[in-house]
Length: 434
Image 1: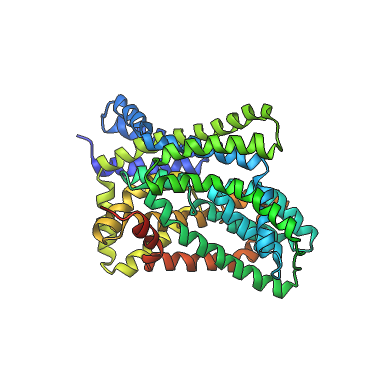
Image 2: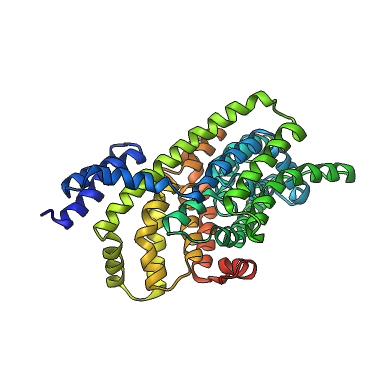
């Protein structure tokens, strides 16, 4: 008879070991699951069935559509138009381009749903522009990277769909709505930090636009932003599911990109599909591997043991939430977002939702914001790496400047954690639970 405690150590220990030796996360999950299953004498076909079952979900069909729509709009000129629109709205404030950076990320996040895509699209335009206008390299990269995190909180976000799957079917529509106020709060907080930096370092304002220019810029930007309106509006109204609205958004994005903006030729479309397929393959392989890993965790009662362990530390709700936030922040520094959502949700969900009575929507937004901060922190922050590559600057040069930005992000995280109304007000108003 296999010892379940040894199996638990084997599953988690091998996973950590494979991560330390730099094995890709998907293979780390698969190999640790297979070896543990062999020790437990579980047929490997059962592990394969769990992997297949993990990706056999209708709601997951929304992910490829989100990826394709974001890829099309990113390459088709939407990022440049959103920058101009943001410049029109906030460019006249001191440190105008930094304010534009935050606002453009807010808008672009409503289309791409990805922090890395935001840094890649917005950053490649704004970072060189900011340098040319006299902004310091460290600040230009830091504000681009941190503001990009709005992309995973402001809907639509495929990470919310992954959380919904991991949590056992939480409403995607309510999750989308729950991200609005936290995302905007994060953007406003970073805009305030940008203004303080601009005053201290004497960064310039941007020029005024004529009325005709303003009208043209607004018209062009609204056409792109309507992609997000289709997705969110369709889900809220109940006309479409998240998957159906994402599919319609792809058709709309295709028309706007190739027949209205016309910045790229139609022959580029196969390359867009190829890039989307590469991203999708990584996401789906990860979900499949994490499903097998999660099934073994449930078999070994790891979530129940984690709940008991945390409640043994303290029964105080405030201390428990602070402890969970610290754990997620630390994990976010060493692992990427999607695998952490799939691994930590089954473990922490019983603690915060069952034991503490937190809303699944509230916990989802708190979890995603924690892991979004991890995207900006060394040693494994993917958004930070992309931003430093675009800005051609070393990570250690940026980190010191980013400290005030991280403090703002953690401040917003604490607000969201302890004031649930910030997350739940819009979902309860527009999509009340029956």
